[in-house]
Amino acid sequence: MTKNIMIVGVGGQGSLLASRILGNAVLLQNYDVKVSEVHGMSQRGGSVVTYVKYGDKVASPVICKGEADVIMSFELLEAARWLPYLKKDGVIITNTQQINPMPVVTGAAEYPADLVEKMKAAGAKVIAADALEIAREAGSEKAVNVALIGMAAHALGIDDETLREAVRISVPEKFLELNLKAFDLGASHSA
Image (cartoon, rainbow, N blue to C red; front, side):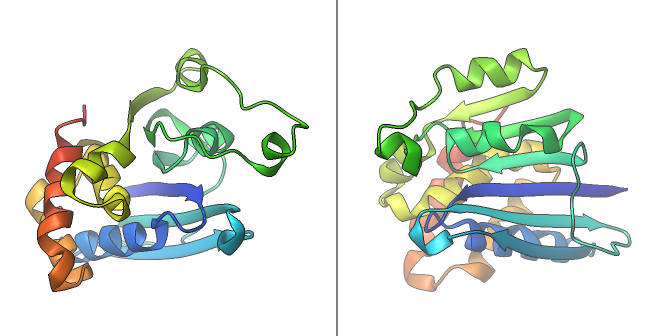
């Protein structure tokens, strides 16, 4: 059994902390885990992709097209962009936030409409919610990554208490209560 998780988003959204939390969670369950980040211009709002692969024995962190069990997306267009990597029975958990890529900013293109419906029409199971608003409700937009992990909890196959413990290990004490609240609020949106 190997589980393949892709975390996709735009630079600065917290995807690296999200991958650290997931890595810690699966280590707590005594799985072998490999985490790898691949990104473009992350500091300039470019696409960021992190692979988290775990199981009894994992040789490589790389996830190829059609292999992702779960795609966690911090931004709607990024979810659609990485859809070809999803397994036939996989799940996309996405924040509904829209961050305009440069062609949209310059007026050369329009942000695609109805992306959740289009991904569902392509056969994907999609769980979509405004993770940014969930994080705000918890107390800070910076907790969007942990809100997203909460939304993905059921699909990840990791129990909630293990994920909470991974948050405790990964987040500084002064932000712990806020992040645990973001996790719980996000989990209330999982399916």
